[in-house]
Image (cartoon, rainbow, N blue to C red):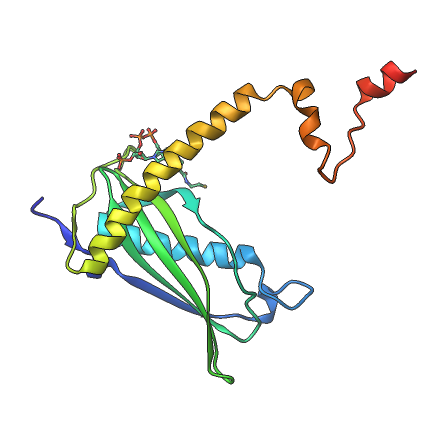
Length: 190
Ligand SMILES: CC(C)(COP(=O)(O)OP(=O)(O)OC[C@H]1O[C@@H](n2cnc3c(N)ncnc32)[C@H](O)[C@@H]1OP(=O)(O)O)[C@@H](O)C(=O)NCCC(=O)NCCS
């Protein structure tokens, strides 16, 4: 663990002005613009810690709570929350600031899992993380918990998919806002 690095070593912030070409017809910023900026800051932060090329493996908790407007300054604050052997979880806090009205909105906090790759493209070990504050420790522990919950959820979802038989599950749709119009139901009526 002699090449371990602190959370502060790779802490990264990107600030970008939201220009009109980023907006949709309603004048709000496209979610995809924010996702792309989040991916960039996650890459910069993870690559700095790993000292290698990294790839994005998964993205959790993307939920835009408030719209971002043209003219606002968006800042994305990224830090390494957790490291495994070759994976890193980067926490990203996104805030939008309106300079004129001096208001600041916290639009979302998301977690990007990145994997460090060696020159042959294989996952490679990353430096251990030095936790220098209670906040660093809390985020590391939370990441472990989130990973456990995610794995359990994935298993539940996989089981639900394999056990779901369409014909036996049609009653679940009775209170939903959909109309079943399968070709074979129509044919059996003729
Ligand atoms: C992610 C990837 C590296 C996994 O490769 P692999 O040969 O299965 O490697 P491993 O099983 O050793 O997994 C490597 C690490 O990724 C983690 N990982 C793999 N799949 C994961 C997932 N769905 N979610 C979170 N972590 C994941 C593993 O837990 C492991 O972490 P650890 O080393 O810290 O324990 C590989 O699938 C890949 O390169 N995917 C494409 C990524 C990419 O190109 N992203 C850009 C999209 S355009």
